Length: 403
Image 1: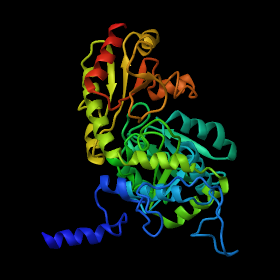
Image 2 (image 1 turned 135 degrees about the vertical axis):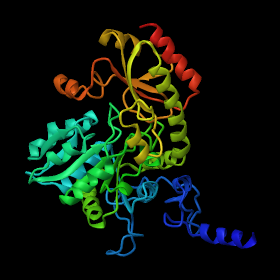
Image 3 (image 1 turned 90 degrees about the vertical axis):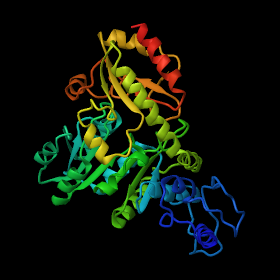
């Protein structure tokens, strides 16, 4: 017993992502080891300085010269992001869309083609169609639930496959491992937007993907008080290219937001377990309600890809979509009748949110394209919070009673 105690003390004196194995431990310690040669802060300080003084002209102090290039608080966050995704490298950005923009502008050029899941976050499709197509990039949207649809869409100029799983807002699941194998066979990159699952429930890099992407605004921060994005990966060459463009483009996160995300990650495991527990109960309640037409949640056995979700995810997260009966008018009545839920965009915070994709998060997608994907006027999306489940269901029940 004494030998074990000494061994434990020896290891914890020099913590690193490699020396820690369990998610919750890494989420609390990596990147935030106290500097006992300095002030010994247990919590990483917020380094708000925009620039850093040096003694010698050619030697920046501890490698820091300008906060856009590198900042101690952001460095701490990036170490932790890499650790919780089981990645070698991570980069933090000012938003999820900033991360997407830097990623694509770094790795693609005019004339390149991207295959993307047809059910994507509306902001991603807006970025692709309204902005990046103007720079000569080409995008094809396919139902990636059928892996053959991805392979059939490959062209000579295809360079990247871009997927979400689960998707926003229809909770579609695609086979990350199978799609990544296709990409490698054709010398293409696979990017997975892992925002809905979070690193706690899904590890795309371990399934063969090249890059895992997050809006840290959502589950990773978890408190609806910061905007940010992140890229995690293992390829050093790609990492260095992305880091160069992170600095050159300047889409970096602020030190204060970095601090908030670091703080949020510390409770990510606890929060995700509660999100999932509550979401399962909500999904079962909605599925049994006579005024609900359909429920989209990969944790339900009725979900057509439930087995695939179980195979590549360790949990089902807290996102649910469902369709109410009787059309848009009644959907609006329901949405405006909730009390505990906030009618608001975004997701992944401790509080429960509800929104209408067709009129809110995916309004930038033309109606005919939304309907082709399956986003109807009756569809609503819930981000199930960590409140008491009885209160959550009571609020949904009273709102449904008014429909």
